[in-house]
Amino acid sequence: MATLYFNTETNRVFSANAVTGDEAVSQGRAVKVTDAPDGIEQWRLSYDPSTKAVVTFAEGKDEAGAQTDKDTADTAQAAAVKKKEEDLIAARSA
Image (cartoon, rainbow, N blue to C red):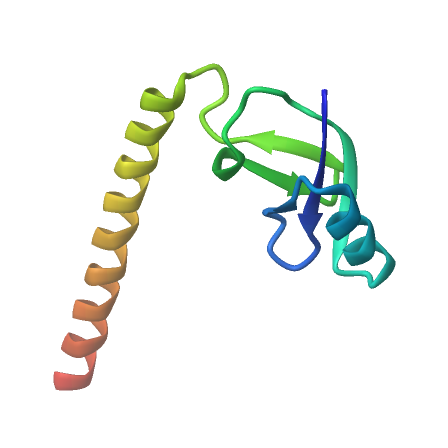
C-alpha cells in the first residue's frame, strides 16, 4: 500500500511527497491516507470523506480500459451539458 495525500476541497490526489503532503495536512488542505492502492494511476484515485476511503475509478480495469471509460463518461457529460444549454435557450425563446 502507498501513502498519498488528498486535497480536502477536490478529494483528488494532492501529492505523494511526504514533506509537501505533511505540510498541507498541517495547514488543513490535505488528508493523509496510508492505505492507498499501489500501481494505480493517480488520476484514477479520489478520496471519499464520508467513508474515509480511497475510491478507484474503473476499478479492476487496466489503464487502457479506464481511459476508455473516462472518455465515454466525458462524452456523455458533454452531451448532457449541451442538451441543458439548448433547453435553456429554448425556454428563453418561448
